[in-house]
Each structure stands twice: as C-alpha cells, then as structure tokens.
Image: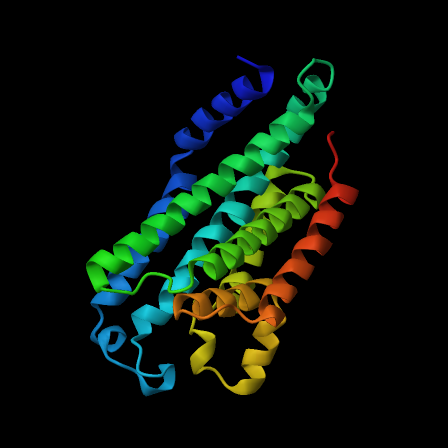
Length: 246
C-alpha cells in the first residue's frame, strides 16, 4: 500500500466518524427535501415556475446546499485543526508530504458531496416524483463546477482563519449569504429580475441556474457556467497563494 493510499484510507475513516459533518452534508439536504415536498404549497403546479412544482425547483437548491455544507462548513475546520495541531508541520518532515493530506481531504469531501447529491436526486424522484436531470452532460459539468467552487472557497477560508474556532465562526457567517444565493429562501425563478441578475453573478447563484436548466433538459447557459468557472479560478488562485502549512 502506497503512502498516499494509506493517508486516504485514514482520512476516510475520520470523515465517517465525524457524525455531525455526515449529518449536515449527507442527511440534512435530503431530510429537508422530504419535508418540503410534503407541504401542499410545494406540491401544486406554480405558474411562476412554468407549471412546475416548487419542490421541483428546490432540488437544484438542495443539491447546492449539500455541496456548500461539505466544502465550506466541514472541510475548513478540519484543515485548520490539522494546521493548529502541527500535523501539517510534522508531516513535512516525513516522506508523506502535507499536500498528500490536503489532496485526500479535498477528494473525500468532493466524494461526500456527490454522494449526497445522488441521494437528493434519488429521494426526490422516488418520494416526490421529481424528474431526473434531463441533460446529463450539462448537469454533470454544472455540478462539477459547483463542487470545485465550494471546495476552493473552503480552502480559502482555511487559509485565512488562524484557529479552528474562528474558521467555524467565519464558515457559519458565510453560510447564510451562500445559501441565499443558491436559492434556499426562494428559487431565483420566483424573484424579481434585478435580484436574479445579482444572484446570477454569484458562484452559487450561477450554479443554481445552470443546474436548473440542465434539470429541465437544456444545456446550461454558457454565461452561468462561465461565472461559476471564473469564481472557481479566482478562488483556487487565492487558496494556492494564501494557504499556510503552519
């Protein structure tokens, strides 16, 4: 077994044991979908949504909620904790470089988020009859960009936060505008034009639009994909520039 594989397995066991993180990333979005879908107002066809139901429009939002939870709420605390405890510094003196640990964390949180996405889509289809993505390649690309921007943002938070406590506080404060931009308090389709334009310039607002378009069977607008990709590039560059190993 290579050192990288050993680190990946060890980190995977720690991720599974983080029960609070597993709940918020994997269980919470699906539970929220089940509850929302039971509300009569969410099951009725809505003219503002082109005849779709509110629960249909909320599936992309809850998909993004899983991605946001994994990338910006759980991962930063873990990375800052490793730096705070000197784990990354000690690893730099061994054949296993700290970058191996960082890569394993990013990969595991990406896999956890994608697992939660599959669960939301499956439960939405089986329990509430929500259609599956109609344009699978477009949906996969929009989802990959959303995961990338969330993990990049989480790495930036881990880079600038000096302590685990502060990282948790900053992530908690950041969660609300991120969730609002993704549409948690109302999908963009039901908002005024000015609000839609503002949300469309944010990483998760653009990702929500791209995912919704792919859900309805169309290729996502390049403008939405471009905004998400641009935010991803900027945040990745910031994370590379600012991340400190000790």
